Image (cartoon, rainbow, N blue to C red):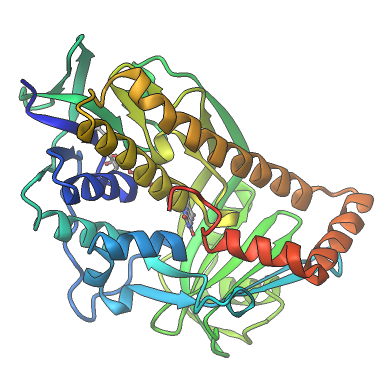
Length: 397
Ligand SMILES: Cc1cc2nc3c(=O)[nH]c(=O)nc-3n(C[C@H](O)[C@H](O)[C@H](O)COP(=O)(O)OP(=O)(O)OC[C@H]3O[C@@H](n4cnc5c(N)ncnc54)[C@H](O)[C@@H]3O)c2cc1C
């Protein structure tokens, strides 16, 4: 007899979403994390520097699961338009939710508050148990269950173990599942900035020779910037006095929102892609960054992980309803097939786009400029891309 049906290691965005989707259906689930669970932010609490563009389809799922309504309005900003342009050519493209009859494309959301809202909803469900802080120390797979040992000596058993334990996934490594790593040779400098002109609920991204620079709208009127560039350049920018940094940032962004008038804390995050060779093993499934990590230029990493959580929950719930063991490989394979066929083309497209936009050769520059303009004018293709940006093309939702 196991302690629970599913034991999830990692209570980030994807692990807590899976826990919620399972507990909402009455499946006994335990989720553990080495960090304590974050609390919902108090009114007026400053926004954390880490935010994500959560697309409309993922927001819809989180709404249905009851977590989204718990997220304070100050921590989420719906956006209806995306503008992308190239510094080295005339290429530019705009996406508008109105073109596909949607009120908005997604929401720029504080990561910490989203995880806190997921935890707050989990606390309301009797089928869910959260252990945090609790460190995974070791685990083994037996014929009928997985056994997990925690750092404090406790032992837990489950029929299915899920690795939602991030890019360095101890579960993936210990299971011997290989992964191809893609070193983008970049770091992202992130910060919140105030601008002279309003962001007008629009996410903007300019492709520079060194990498993309994004301005994402925040609920308090500021923008969250994600400036992907070479590691030495990111360190140089992070060390600049605030005034000089704001000037360089304004220039790099062509002052599309006027002057940069204030800047908060700056953080530098190394960027490295990853794709696991398998998403499942005996009594094991990987979701989120444990299975795949993409460049943030497309704002998709967390969204793909939420899609994984939705797809795996569906497979597990169907197995339990049908009296089948959720940890068997034949139960888990449909999850792997569905998500790899969804995620791999996205990962490859993002790697290709990144190479195209950081290529210095002038024929490529001309090609991408012409390509962006052509797509911008091609109605059906553009509507297809706008639908994808909303997450409405991802079968998991
Ligand atoms: C600069 C930047 C911008 C981004 N912007 C976007 C965006 O706009 N939209 C988007 O969709 N995505 C975006 N992403 C990607 C997104 O942040 C990640 O894909 C997402 O946060 C991954 O969530 P996760 O839950 O899979 O992993 P993680 O957030 O890494 O969570 C893993 C959890 O596992 C726990 N853990 C690890 N090991 C153990 C252990 N041994 N025992 C117990 N617990 C353990 C950790 O403490 C952690 O809480 C961005 C990423 C970056 C770097």
